[in-house]
Image 1 (cartoon, rainbow, N blue to C red):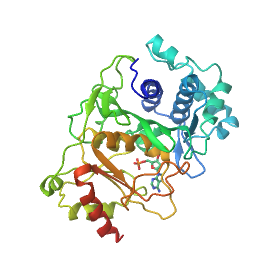
Image 2: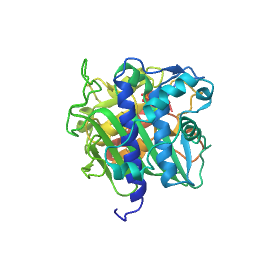
Image 3: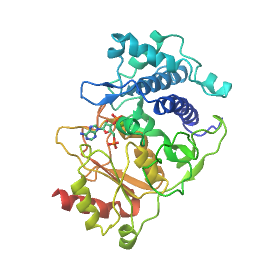
Image 4: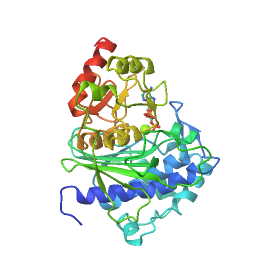
Length: 359
Ligand SMILES: Nc1ncnc2c1ncn2[C@@H]1O[C@H](COP(=O)(O)O)[C@@H](OP(=O)(O)O)[C@H]1O
Ligand SMILES: [Mg+2]
């Protein structure tokens, strides 16, 4: 194993994401996805719970004293044995095909109860001290249910700074040069040509590799954002936005794009697949403009993507131009919205954002 800083964390994170994605892909191809509604009325599926259990068991096997902030909680499962058993049926049969990689992740979870205990361990309050992992087992659950894009997301923060970020995007093209689209094709039933892992380690750049590659083979390739520099470059840019109108103000985003001279319609894509897409230069700018003064973005929805874009030559801030602050708990309580763009034009984008939003 390489002795670069965070080499072990990166390897474990990539393998954990790869294994969890095997589970989510099985659920993705099923008609019924064991969907239940959470307290905030957002959907969660057996795929979300199963992927979270597998990732936490891998982290516990390797970094037992690290804290974990994960999106899902286990309480509903403790009173719903049918749902628990559906998840367990998936978790117990999901393993990496490479036995040494599977062993590195600690192997199989021993029982359904142990699985619930792992899910429950993602309850850290987060904060500015020590090593904290952030997990979104299925980011873009609505996209996952719609047959669109989604991502399995894992990041390590140390003293509030993201040091390692990994995004597994089962429905994005493997090819970094493929055209930007959120569409995965009608009636697509196999994974031919799709499935990519984006990774970054602080000060070591960003990479992509096929999600289905042999677990320990190294097919990682460096990725970088498109080097937009001029106003003309900016006018030809592709903007990524959420699919969900409730998650990001589409009308203001349209005004911002027009101010920058951008004529192409935005590509609407669920999940942190947007961060991966701009980091590999398929798209250029990610705009997320808040729709409510009370909603606080969650750290697991941004930590991995923030580092991957910055390591690929981008800048990520909120609409005031401040860097995202992962040190204040489970949410980005100090930030409003997200603006990601190549470094050289990020300032110009922020000026347009502020003019439109009247900041
Ligand atoms: N009102 C809101 N504003 C912004 N983001 C929201 C939101 N309500 C939910 N979200 C978050 O948006 C994420 C999806 O991102 P996107 O809109 O880019 O696809 C959801 O993640 P989950 O799907 O993991 O729940 C959820 O955390
Ligand atoms: Mg999410």
